[in-house]
Amino acid sequence: MSALSPSVGEPQAVRQLLERDSGIIAGVEKLRFFPLAVIGGKGSHLIEAGGRALLDLSASWTAAGLGYGHPAIVEAVCAGIQNPAGGSGLSAISEAAVTFAEQLSADLQEVGGSNRRVYLGNSGTDANDVALRACRRATGRERIVAFKGGYHGGLGLAMGVSHIFAAAGVPADPNVTFLPYPDPWRPHTGDAGTVLDDVILRLRDELSRENVACVILEPIQSDGGMVIPPDGFLSLVADACHEKSVPLIVDEVKVGLGRTGYLHAFAHEGIAPDIITLGKTLGGGLPLSAAVGPAWILDHGTASSLLTSAGNPICAAAGLAVLSVVRRDGLAQRSRVLGERLRAALKTGIADQGLSDRVGSIRGRGLTIGIDLVKNGDLSTPDPELARKTVYRAWELGAVVFYVADNVLEITPPLVMTDDEMNEGVEILLTAIAEAETVSNEQIRQFSGW
Ligand SMILES: Cc1ncc(COP(=O)(O)O)c(C=O)c1O
Image 1 (tube, rainbow, N blue to C red):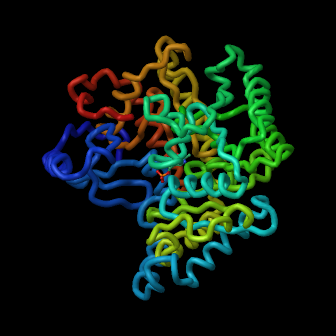
Image 2 (tube, protein in one colour):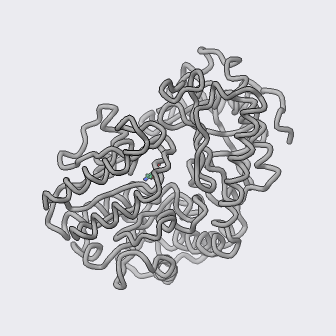
Image 3 (cartoon, rainbow, N blue to C red):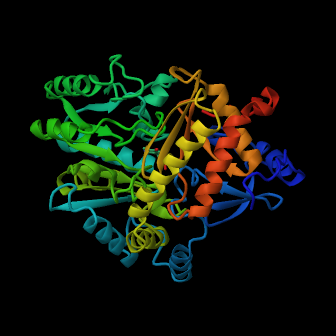
């Protein structure tokens, strides 16, 4: 497939599916950026209604971390569904769920001490919700410390501690404190050199109040704008929490399982979180999440977090296949190498094609990459319109990419992406940024995005 295949507009098949969707699927679950209507997928590509292949540079917000139709997942799920050991983990033990949890725990020796438990859930939201509530119950304390720009879930308490929603006017949990996240590109102190010290000072101050049930953070803030914190952030937070015996939850729902170039993103600084939450990639496309942490927290309150289909053996089988493929195929290492190449190719292309006035920064770790779109090359003037038109133009050119924080393209392709696909992705992204103004306001009007 050529990167510069002619733009297709909206062919009949796409339009028909969109019309049916708008008449039946609830608006409350729609986060739409362009007319993406799909009927299948293979590897790093989605197949659009009408048959066009689209290179997926998002991996469905990383839910398809191993791409689409991965043979190991197909095999595991087919075997599981032919002879399912029940459909729920609530009141029955299944071999698949126990084996998966054992493997996940074995991969997380640094987390939660030696007596670990694994909560199995359906989505990143419930894994975070459960972890947060368990911390409150087990510590008898109420206050949660979270970070500005954070995203931990789209419902319940996980939503209540997600600053993205609070900033948009959704009432936050009454017992959450939001601290600034150390952002070297847009420093809240006005000086990149002081953000880290300031955040840690504020955190220590919060923790000294003795009423904190837990701290929750993203090791890279993705929906908040692909913010890579300065080195030292994770270890300084972990030390501060440890000194006050306050549990630290590291939310790796989006960036875990190889995506940052490490099997787990917290390994970048070698810290030992109390709890880690995982989702998205973990299920290989099926709904599966986990919270892994100490028994004194996750065993506290038997039958206090109940979802019927959580821990079901089919999703567990998919999860086990994902864990083994990530290890077997060295996908963390692959992500590190490919991510470096991708960032380098983007930087060269931006300079060569005279696009530096539109791109304030290209940053990332592994295959977790942000392209920060701005006016006049200046980070103090983000360009949301350019982001909206770029993702639309990219779709016309044959790729799927979304934006976060209004103006940052989030590049999180499947970890199995090939070198050729990467090159194709770079070509499409550069062309889309260059040609964004060919997209009319009318074309993007109905796609409100975030
Ligand atoms: C860091 C992080 N945590 C939690 C979630 C929520 O996961 P889910 O949408 O699977 O419930 C997301 C989703 O984008 C996320 O990025």
